[in-house]
Each structure stands twice: as C-alpha cells, then as structure tokens.
Amino acid sequence: MILDPLRTLPGVIAAALVGSDGLAVESYGDGGDGLAAELASLRQGMDRTGRRLGTGDVTRLAFTSERVEVVAVTTGPYTLGAAMTRGSDTRTAQQSLARLAVDLVMPRETP
Image 1: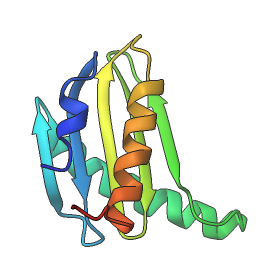
Image 2: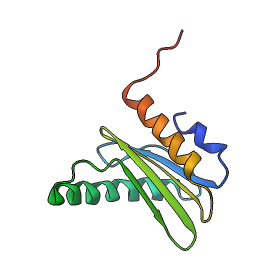
Image 3: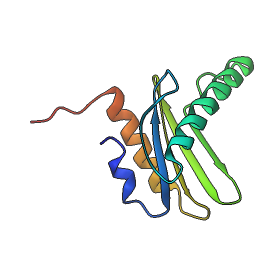
Image 4: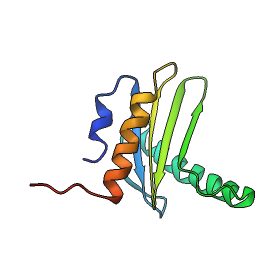
C-alpha cells in the first residue's frame, strides 16, 4: 500500500492519504479515518487562506496538540499526513511524506 513506509517509523500512530474529493484513498492506525477527514478539511481551509493572502498553494502543514504531532504534505489533488506521538522527531516522517507525494504525481517505473 502507498502508506506502508510510514508504518515502521517511530512514533507514527496513524496515517492517511486523501483525494481531492475529501475521501480517504488509504488510512491506517488508531484514528486514521478521522485523520483523513480532518486533513481534507484542513486542506480546504489552508487553500482558502493561501488564496486570500496571495501566498500560493500550501504544500506542507504541521501542528502540535497536547497528545500528537501532525505533519502533512500536499501534491496535486492529494494530501498525505501522519499523526505521531507528541515529542516524536517528525523529520523522518516529513521526508517520507515528501517522497510519497512525489511518487504519487511521478510514479517510478518498475523494471
């Protein structure tokens, strides 16, 4: 599955891939479906904010709550995100999400 590389990362408790229609293409983990729904909503809000401020497309989003760190990237019509245990190092997840995003829009050729 597309999100499999995130499963082995320390601290990842849920991940989701959302399409332009706001529906989950794939999700896993405790709260994965909820994360998918909220990523779709967050993307709409961030896109609207970007338009109003004239900043262009939002391509990365990160926030911290009392219990989790959420990191997400957008590419074309897709949003990919991971919820991680608070205090986790999010750099590896951010890098993995960016690679997955590139693969979504420019799939690698298989020999």
